[in-house]
Image (tube, rainbow, N blue to C red; front, side, top):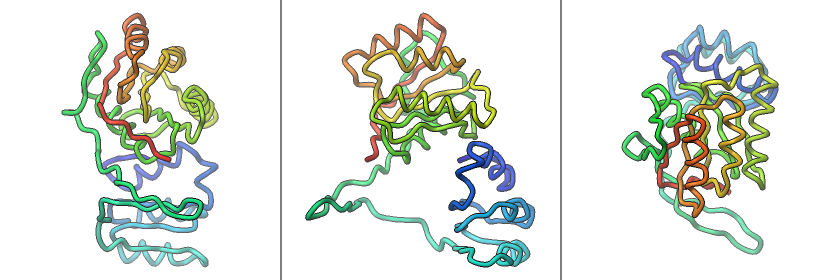
Length: 233
């Protein structure tokens, strides 16, 4: 995932985060696909592309390959409930419609994140919300660097993300970390600090929050709490 001032740049930044898994995958854009973007996207083998609109030349280019599905999103998805199948039944639950904003952030460390770090933290938190728990997201402003997803241990999720970032050549110094739930121990912020990560966003709420806060203060890291736990199963 990535954001940028144009679709082509956003695509290239997103592709950098995992050039292996992107092969044969699904691409989605929230902006019209222009010809320049289509020329870049067309180099990749993918199954499905979703966007709100396409320039005529871009659409013709993308349609040139067989067995490719191109979808035009007609309207934003609506609804406040979701249903999941279980053994012998289904469960109904509220959708997580909360998107963290600057107003939600509470700085709990001596170091206050910069405006650029806040943008990166909110970006990472948005990705975290849509990622299977336990998850850790590593990012800079507008670009996902790596994710550790679906792990039984938050430490394992972080280690997975660090390994993936190294695989694709990212330097984590100066990056930020997002967690979908609180840290019951300071181990994750300790590992993050060793990688050069400078700011952390998490919901807070552990009885041992102060342990992680104290570690961040001792190592000049910034940490913010959101008060909202985005835990996706």
